[in-house]
Length: 196
Image 1 (tube, rainbow, N blue to C red):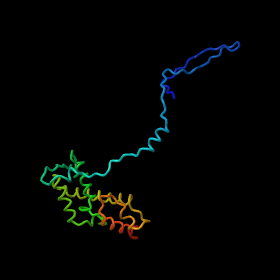
Image 2 (cartoon, rainbow, N blue to C red):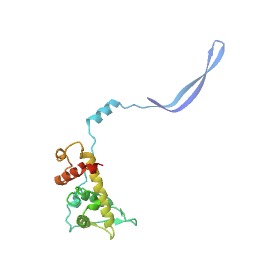
Image 3 (cartoon, rainbow, N blue to C red):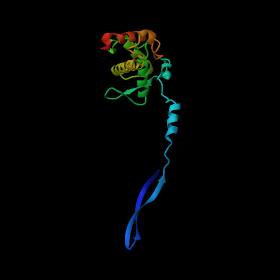
Image 4 (cartoon, rainbow, N blue to C red):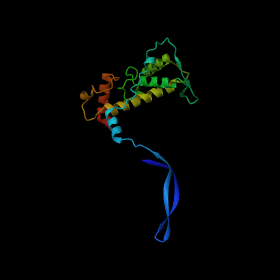
C-alpha cells in the first residue's frame, strides 16, 4: 500500500499523426510505503490469549491495620463529597464493606431495611481506619448503600438463573458471599412477587 503525501501534475506533449496532443500525468512527490498487518496473525493471537482483568478489590493494607495505627485523613468538599489524595482509598474501602456479608448482609431485601445497628457498625469500622470530618456519616452510609445495591445487582446478573433450582445454584457463587445469605437471596429472587 502506498500513501501519497503530495501530488504534482506534469504536462507532456506527444505528436500523434500531424497534431500535437497534451497529456497530463500525475506524479507522486512523496511516496510512503506502509505495510498492512497480517490480520490472520492478530486474530490467532487474540484467540490464544485471554484478556487479563484487574480482579476484586480487597484493600488488605487497610483491613489488616490495627485500629491503634495511623488513620488516613479524608477531606470533604463544600458539597459533602470526599476529595484529596485519600479519596480513592476511602471509597474503595467503602466498597469492600458493602461486599462483606458480616457488615452488609446480602439477604436484607432493601438498604432502608438494614438495621441501624449494622449501619453503626459500618461507621465505627470506617472511623477506625479513616479520620472523617463531622457530618461525613450521611455521605458514607449513602455511598456504602449504593455500592451494596450495585453488588447485589452484579451478582444477580452473573450468578442467578431463574430457570434453575435454588439448590443447584447454591455452590455457583462468588467466593466472598456467605452461603446462608446466598441461599436466602436466591429464595427471595425466586419469589413470584419479586420477579414481577
